[in-house]
Image (cartoon, rainbow, N blue to C red):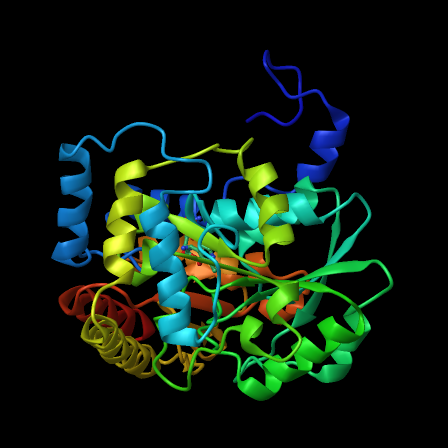
Length: 396
Ligand code: PMP
Ligand code: GLN
């Protein structure tokens, strides 16, 4: 989309231009294009290089063959809403009514967009932690709201209660929490969630949680914010099938919340995509009902890949920060004599044949993020080993 200028078809609405200024091509698109152009190993954009479970693939194919190829119902197909409700109860002890408290969306991305557009008025403020996932900032801006960030600081990406309290003002309407956290791999601990919950309750803030990595946890445990006292009815819980079933291109997600909140999100959602991906909804339902062993084996495999890549990055000379979840591990590049992560990542494909993501693009406090770089470990072992060999050669 052209946001300004004289080109035919340029968006001339100054309001839109102002809201979206600074949002060019996403870092993921830029870095994946660089990987293709240079033939590098892509440890940038977060997608696995092996497909998810056979049962899930078969369910999608069966749904297509059975003729489930027309518009699904607005809230999502009933079997998926039921499977989401069952999953929330089975793993997290959260009880949602599949008819009034679950909404199927085109990935977590649409769930987040519809939620923020539904809840925010122009001038409202949103508290979130930085580094933040890029779509939150864009959606907050599209809603005409402002973000106020709390910086997570390495090595453990912790935050202070004072910093959180300082970010809250009378205009704060929403708090966005992503745990397990992209890009840091942090899994928020119960004590941290208790602080966040108490601030939400005290200031009557609605929490919106992005839990797409809920099953990618290697140390500690995933605790949905909605399970904390006082949070169930003030939290919009968002997740998706992409990461859990290694099918990031299927873009099938869901939102769980109390009926009034779901109604508001559904109202917006119907004018974004209306509905999407009928066969993939059947497949996601099949995935959510897989036995515990699937989820356990999946996390164990990724934990061993986390160890492989983290160890390799340390051997290559980086300062490696612990990752407890997600696909990602972050490093400080300064031991290699570099200070600017963006510059480092733009030249790394050419110099080292590996693509990574500079996390500075997810910070308002540029100084805090400048030397930090994210690597993705959800790839086949031989790919990770090759990447480590290349990075070690770079350091010599
Ligand atoms: N949230 C976070 C934190 C992510 O890393 C991603 C990228 N996978 C998404 C949301 C997008 O999820 P989906 O593909 O389901 O839209
Ligand atoms: N979530 C993926 C990541 O963090 C990227 C998805 C996208 O390209 N927007 O790498």
